[in-house]
Structures are given as structure tokens and as C-alpha cells.
Amino acid sequence: MGLDQNIVVHGVRERTPYTSPAEFVRENLRLRGFAVIRSSFAPEFIEEISTAIDSTYDAQCKLHGGEANLVKISDAHIVRAPCSLDDRFIAVAMDPVLQEICELVLGPYWILQNQNAVINIPGTDHYQFTWHRDLNYQHWTSSRSLGLSALLCVDPFNEVTGGTYVLPGSQHSEAFPSDRYVLENQVVVCAAPGDWIVFDSMLFHRTGQNSSKITRRGINHIIVPPIIRQQYSFPNMLAGRLKSDAERRFFGVGQEPSPSADEWRQSRIDALNV
Image (cartoon, rainbow, N blue to C red):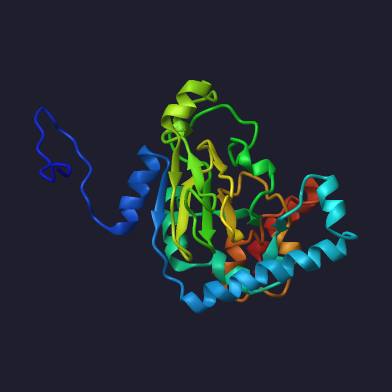
């Protein structure tokens, strides 16, 4: 017998109405801390992105003297800021569906703090297999989200390929819970290629082990208000390649820290004369 589809309440004075798919995503983020957005990308584009992840990783390995050097710093199978080498990753980050969710969750102004592609190879270990928050080392809660993590699934995410495991609602808890709580409450989030898994950046989560025979790729974005600094200077890496005001705003152009207090003040004086 399935779940009762009749929603009947009593003693309830306030409730959240369903108004749109985007608002439903925000409701899930607020209560559970995560949601899945079904793909709006063409399958051919996702195949291109899959190939681009591998080629970009190879290029970064060569730049740093080979993959062995990345292994030494526990950074193998991670593509750092892939948009710095391929404009298709800019297009991924600017997906209109994702941008709408950013505005609903984070308010009128937000920037990209981080973009990394994760390559989950069968039978290998990775530091992202451990539980963590994307805003690392922080043990506090806030009434509104201060970060949105958006993971584009390039390959199938499930129990076999290594889906994303989450602890629902843990963005509301300061401390990491007990082992028993984790074992009894962890949930694996499954998604298809092209889907977004979006979650509060303070939600405890981890990557699952890949026990399949295929490589599982994903591209994670951490999106924050500009009061939080970027992990990399996207304005510096993407200088001259950002085509629209929306792209320049999202990648943090104009939000870089000033070299001095005098230059900070002068930049605002100069803006008055534009």
C-alpha cells in the first residue's frame, strides 16, 4: 500500500503553499538541506563536458609535473577551476535554472566561491569520501543559508557508482552527530546525468565509494554572498572572457579586495564620475 496522498491537517494556522518548482526546491533546501533538479541540459552537451573534464584534468596534471605530484598533496582526481581552461564550464555555472535558485536562496547578490570537478574512479580512495561541510571547519548555524552547493552530475549518481550521501537537516546542527545517528540517518542522493544536486553548504555530506565499472564525474560549485572570499580569483583567471554583466557579477568581478584602504576609497570616488 502506498503513502496516503490526502494532506489533511488540524490546529494549523500557517503553512507553505506550493507556488513553483523553484520555490519547492527552496523549501526542500530550508527543511531537508538538499534537493535534486532534473536536467535542462542536452545529452550531447553532458557528453562534451565529460570529455572536457578528463582533458582538463590531464592538462592540469602536466602543468604540475604529473599526477604523482597531485597524489603527494592529496589532490588527485580533482579538476581545480575547470572554467579557467574551458568556457563550457562557464556555461555550466551560468545555467538559468541554477541561477534562479541562487537568487531565491541567497538574495539579490551572490558570487562563485569555488568550482571543482571530481573524478570518482572505481576502487580508489579520495578525501571527499569523508563527511564534511563545504564551508569547512565551521560549527555554527544561521537562520538563512550562507552558501549553496550545486553539484552537476555528469555520470549516474547512485549507490553503486558513488552517489552523494547526506545527513538531512544537519545544516541546522552545530556539531557533527554521533556515529550511530549517522549510520541510521544517512541518505544517498541519486541523480541522472545532467541533474543538479543542490544543498546547503553547511549540510554534512560525503562522496560514496564507486564500486561500479565506470568513472563517475561531477562538477561542484559553491555559491556565496560576496562577504565570503573566493577560493580562487575567478576575475583574474577569466579576465576578458566573461561576456555579460551577469557572468561578470557571478564570477566576482568588482568584488576583489582592494590592495589598500586608499585604493578602496578612490575606487568609490571614481565610480561617482562614471
